[in-house]
Length: 330
Image (cartoon, rainbow, N blue to C red; front, side, top):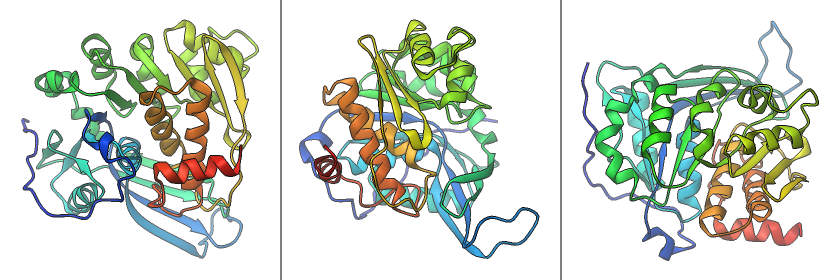
């Protein structure tokens, strides 16, 4: 089966407030990864297994790569998303939403016979994820052969962000051919190992403990502590490690050492997109020349803003909103 990058007609659409117009004029951040339609259920009372739980069901565009791209756009970055979708109603909704939030899709692909990815999740009453099913098979079509013609474009960007929905051979190809700084999100325990060929090229990565253990492959020794895991990933070539510890915060680590930074306080409505918001905040800070700890603080502020919104990406996220949140929590 062959398919070509989709070229969408130019349309007028409202863009989010742009706090840093000068940044929008700079080189694009390219994001290669998954998009999907998120279907999320959150019960009104404590979740009861094996029963029908009254609550709220939401339908919204999502996917790790897409969420990171939208967050970066809301932070004032010029963003181009490279992904693959089917030719179906979910894809139509996702495309319209991406255009409305300023995400460029000119290098994305459409498979007329494919099925746009879907993510179905069930949350706890407090918004924490209980379980999910991810149907992302269409991402396997993002092969090196598909991306090869785009290499000159990718290497003119300011940074490349990838997620582990990509095939491992594609991530290995990216490691060998892309010259700009690269950031990565492991997505899940099931997919984290795909990132191993990319580790020597990473400017930053955001795994949780389980994903970091898989990526380290036993190199952290028997302790499995955040510091040991982060150090093991740095020995494998990663410049900055942001190890997510859930409610405890983030272990931020580089060649100067590591530090545990707590989550910023706030009302938690939904945690499903918080990791994506953190990555966007950390990437934006990296490109602004901030150090590892300062970048982690901006990522935590972005995550806190996201947690207060039922959507996977908060429309209230801006560069100034992060500044304000940090000023309230020095």
